[in-house]
Amino acid sequence: MYDRILIRYGDLMLKGRNKKQFIQAAVARVKEKVKSEKVTFETAHDRLYIRLNGENAETVMADLDKVSGLSSYSPVVKTGKDLDDIEKSSLELLEKLVKGQKSIKVETKRADKTYPLTSQEISKKIAGKILPAFDGLSADMHHPDLLLTIELRSDAAYLFAEKIQGLGGFPVGTMGKGMALLSGGIDSGVAAYLAMRKGIETELIHFESTPLTPIESAQKVVDIAKKLAVYGMQNRVVLHFFPMRRIHEAILKHVPEPYHITILRRMMMRISQRAAKRRKMFLLINGESVGQVASQTLSSLFVSDRAVSVPVIRPLATYDKNEIVDIAEKIGTYEIAIRPYEDCCQIYVPKSPATKPRDFYARRYETLFDYNEMIEEGLEEMATIIVSEKSELDLVASGFTVKEALIDKE
Ligand code: ATP
Ligand code: MG
Image (cartoon, rainbow, N blue to C red):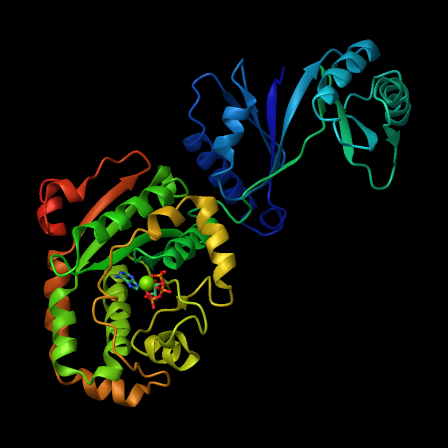
C-alpha cells in the first residue's frame, strides 16, 4: 500500500552552515542501514524519500530507527490526483490508524498550482467524505489526534497520516571522534550509544585482566559492542582490548588502598587518551554518573580529569540509574550487562575508597611505580578488532585470555 517513506532531518542541523554536509551524511547513513535491495533513494529539499518499490514499509522503518540525525518519518501513499482517488486512498490509509482516535484534521499542500481547487477546498471536500465514514470521528483544527496530509504534485497526490519519531541527534561522524571507555557494565554502553547518537564517531576501549578475570567478562564487552555497532559508521564499531593486568597489579602493590580506584581510573584515562591520540581522536567518553558510587563523587571526577589533557564527556553524569536502565533495555545491552562476570575493576574493590581524593596525593602515589613504560608496552600489545552486529566472536570457546582468543582475528 505504501509507495515511499518520507524522512525529515533534525531541525537544528538545518540551520547551521554545515547543512549540506549534514544532509549528505544523513543520506549516507540511511543508505548503509536500509538493507532491502528493492528500495531506491530520492533526495529533495530538506527531505529524503525512500521509494519502496514493493518493499514492506515496516521493514524499512525498523532500520531507520537506528539512524541518528533523523527527526521523523512517515510512510506515504501515492495516488491519482482526482478527488475520487484521493478520497479512496485516504479512507484506506485511515482505516488502520483511526482506532481509538477521536479527531482529525486534513491539510493539503499544493505544489501543483494548476490544480483546479485550492488547498482549503480540497481539505474540506476530503474531510467531508472521511468524517461520515468513521463513527465518532470529528474535525478538530487545533489539536487533532490524527493529521492527514495531502501533497499535490504534478505527477500524483501523496498522502500520509503517521509521523514516527526518529532517533534524533546528529548523523554519526558529523561531530568529530572520541574514545569511549567501555566496561561490561550497564552504564558505559549507554554512554557510548548517546555519544554516537549525538554524531560522534566513537571507538571503544576496554581494560581487561584475563586470566585474572574470566574471559566471559571480555565476551560481555564484545556482545555489547555488537549492539552498539548498529549506530556506528558503516554499521561497525572499533573495539580495543588493553591488557591491564600488570598495571592493575602494580597499583595493588604500591598504592595505598583508599587510592586504588582513584589511580586505576587515572590510568584508564591516561591510556585512553594515548590510544585515542594514536587514532587522531581528542575526546574521551565514559559512563560515570555523579554520586552513583563512592568513586563517582565530584572530587573523584575532578582528580580523574586531571590525569589527562583532552576533554572528557560523561553523557550520564546527571542521569538516574533507572533512566540509564531504560536506555540500556531499548538498545539491547541490559541483558548482556547484567550477566554475572566481573571485570577488572570489580575484582579488588577496596574496603574504604577515598570519596574525596586529592590530585596532590594521586600524583605522589603515581611516582611509586613506572607506569609510563607499562602503558607503552600495553599499547603495543593492545588488540583491536572491528565489530558488527553479526560478528561471530566466541572468546569463551577460544581460550582463557583475550590475547589467546583474538590471536588469529586481528
Ligand atoms: P559501568 O556500568 O559503565 O561499568 P559503573 O557504574 O560500574 O559503570 P565504574 O565501575 O566506577 O562505574 O566505572 C566508571 C566508568 O569507567 C565506566 O562507566 C566506564 O566508562 C569506565 N570503566 C570502568 N571499568 C572499565 C573497564 N574495565 N574497561 C573500560 N572502561 C571501564
Ligand atoms: Mg562498572
